[in-house]
Image (cartoon, rainbow, N blue to C red; front, side, top):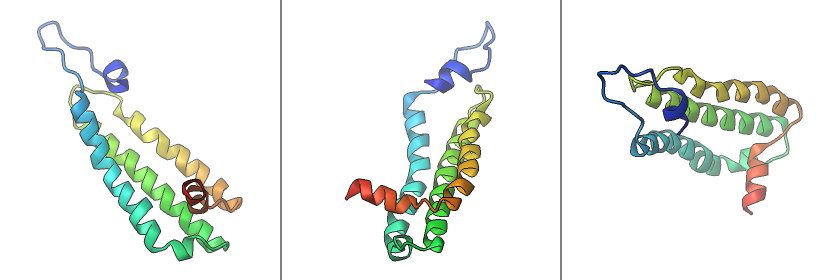
Length: 123
């Protein structure tokens, strides 16, 4: 919706109107989500004894795992939408990475452990 509403180039009067189909958007999401799923569910499960302890290293590792995974998801979304020639300003898909990078030192200083938080919600 956002790509069709705000990122389309101005079409010429003699050109066919182009828009992002929902199947393409879903495909971009799935291609972006799968590596994040592998990191945040499979890898987190395998190294959960390290991530669930109450040390600084576990908090740092957990924060880095989540930051890298979420940043990679947004970067893959950017790559998927920037491949379309009729979209402009696709760099807006990279802005959440800036928020993640800004929040990372704060989370590390306060020893917030996202693995403990997420697993506390699930179980």
